[in-house]
Image (cartoon, rainbow, N blue to C red; front, side, top):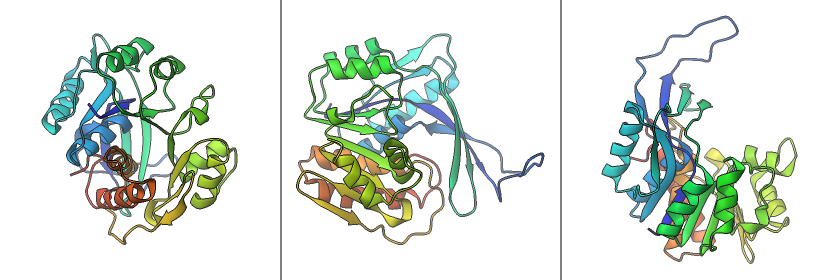
Length: 279
């Protein structure tokens, strides 16, 4: 496997609503259909759909939802040697509310979190040149990842665990809100956030900005990439499609700027379709 995605897999319970209800009020939605989701699952699925040699290191429960995740990933060609079905545990779920403008609001109830042994076992058996990790995982799997031989490219995503040293990454990928949280500020523009995070010792930083595209700051290159104008249907998973594409293009040896351009195109395509999996 060329790219290993380390993090979470869950089921998305998506509700398409006309508006978000106020306190004490209700709003009706079409019938709910469980679909595969979870940030690392979405990223691995996108990478595989784009031709990458992707693996998912994550866990799910031994229930119908967990089996559905396994079937979906198998059909997509994702390597599942590190995907663990945990007996006696319910698969995690995310309740996703999608409003008519395509904006999504997510509440996550995770389960079957990875252990340090899960990460060590999977990446020792099959080392990956590129590893993409969810940095909000519990400390044990992140520590196990750092104790393994360093991959060629280590990519981190999301606001990090408090004990995680961001300077150990090669690439840090976050959205504007996560970048602000990592910097300890209320709000900051994507280009300024990328530069500020790079100045904290991270070799390369990419900050996504939704319909405005993305900004990047590397050792020798900085810039912004505008997103094409599209009609958004559902923003769920767009950032994950972006990251899956970014990893694939970096794996192909492309410079950071070119990889970000390609990833913005894929992320923009993702918002034109329902659900979190890249079609």
